[in-house]
Length: 425
Image 1 (cartoon, one colour):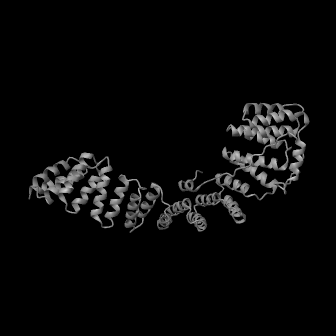
Image 2: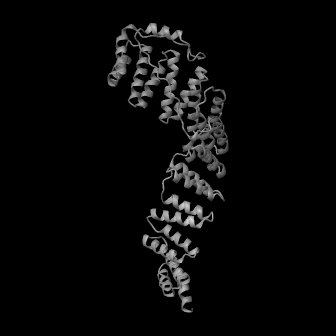
Image 3: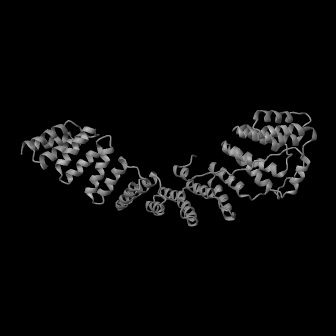
């Protein structure tokens, strides 16, 4: 199932970065001892550390292999790795290290599917110390997730967590992320909530993943609770405020959505054209909020954040009109008409002028609409006819306009009725 539109807005699925581990064979015995002295990354692992190191005979070739990788001589690095891997005297450790090194070289070349194969072989040799062995599993799970082999990714991350008995947050979130993409949303939610409860350094992306899961489970108000909690910690988090607005829109709670964006506005966080557009469109979806829409549009224009164009001035005109500010509406629609490539705005202006008994303006605006082109030119001719006949006492001009209106299907019947009546007057 593909994520919904709002989920895509919310979802910042940042697969945890996994430490890339290299093993340099030079002085292998000393290095192995040094590794053993360090605190293990996986002290609870069920696997016994094999304690292996490279044979002396392979030290030179393996060092050349690592030098080539460090010098970004990728082809040579892979060639030397394969030389060690295919050597009849090579042991599990030499093969594992060579598969590992060549995997990282392939990743540098963006050849992740081939790198995944090498990582699997390195793990299968079962020769590397626990820290490296299990970090390779994490790297492999990450690659498979990125390559959309989600079932494969889940197998490896499950194995990693099970064998190490690890409670590392990044591994748990990688599993939650993978479950999310497999549409196993409730399982993903359960893991994320557990991690958020225990973590001392929760990342914003984890909450965003949780919000996205709730969205896919059609529980937008649960997602809203998470967003509100995040905003308590950081009230100036613009992205979270925008996310919260999107959540409330999805739940058809436009008042709350407008409230979230208004919080951003009062803090000066509306810095892009689309920010102002989203807010004024919201106000127009709420009964009685036309005046608020007017205020937002004018502020955006004054700050030169909102781009002046046909939509902005057309909506500004509507907002003024339904706020009973007809003169201001007319001025806004005149601005909109200057941007319009057709006559639809001019036709709307003509209707407004006629209703305000400004008949000469109505006639001129209707004529302009015809000249620019409208979907229903008959309507414009009717306005001209009515303005001439009833408003300007020009019977001949009105009749001529009705005859034009009668040529169009949308106004044929109406115009012919007026023409018949005019003969009896």
